[in-house]
Amino acid sequence: MTGGRQVSAVSVRVVRPGELGEREIEAWRELRATSGAPANPFMAPEFTRAVGEVRPRARVAVWCQGGEPVGFLPYEKGLLGGGRAIGFGVSDSQGAVLRPGLRPSARALLRVCGLAVWEFDNLEDGQPVFEGAAAESFASPVIDVGEGYAAYEALLRVQSPKFLKTTLAKERKLGRRTDGEVRFVFDERDPAALRTLMEWKSAQYRRTGRGDRFAQEWISTLVRRLHELRAPGCSGVLSVLYAADRPIAAHFGLRSETVLSCWFPAYDPAFAPYSPGLVLHLRMAEAAAAAGITLLDLGRGAAEYKDSLKTGELTVYEGAVVRPGVRGALHWLRREPPLRVHRFVRSRPALAARGRAALNGVARLRGRR
Image 1 (tube, one colour):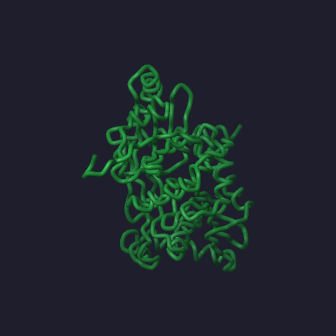
Image 2 (cartoon, rainbow, N blue to C red):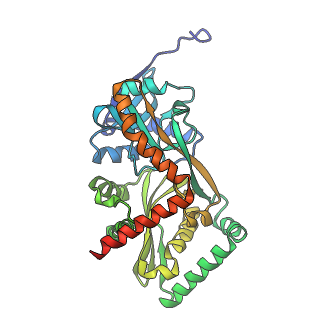
Image 3 (cartoon, helix red, strand yellow):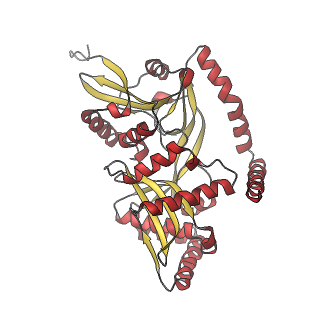
């Protein structure tokens, strides 16, 4: 009893994303809207349902009280009790969507889901259920255009004057090379443009010695389907910079009503002297502000261009919740040693730089074969 009123018990069930009903989807949206967190589209039910179409082991834990949905945790269930955040490896914001005051213990949550461990690499800030589970925190640079693009550009003139002056000069030079035929499309629907972006990105991954994400069928299929998705909380947005009707830079990301989550940027290396990727990001910020978007999330990870563009930072977390037991211990032994090596390298910039140089060298050797 609370204040003379009986509080109904909370129950939990686990379903596939495609089994969520419209009432549950709407409750999920309402919980996000009232949470106070940035409306990141990766946390929308539409993203989870899209992942569920290409990842058969995707699941959602649903909390209900008095017959009403009051919480959701999307995840992917692996073998031997292993679990990961939905879209692990590509999703840029992760966690549970819960009604204020609902705070199940993390280990009880795992027990309900049948998991020995739940891993995350971009846990959203303000997730009290998983407090203490984070091993590392990372900055996710953002561009605030809530006051309009003109205000943002005025800030850049103070904060990054050389960057802005140089980028705008290169944009003008590009226009002269193409007789003024430079145009920008914020929301390009042509699938051919998306294919071009994916080809550029795959080549970039190989060039820099990184694993090609688009070589994984589930990721390339997911991106194609998200490009077609139109929903208030999660829509695919393909932005393209053209020169004489030739695409020279592009970006694919997800948007909610107020947040554009930047995801896959790439450009044609033949136009590298004109910094088309930087020009693209400035035009994206301008068009996003005009479309009612207030925040562009550039995503976790350090990069010089992000430092030049950003107006601030969010924080995301990496870590895992592990239940006591044999399966949890086995997962800990499997994942912890390599993670410690990665953390050691990341904490030493000189060593990390040598590692990147080695990867680039390997990539060049592969390209000569």
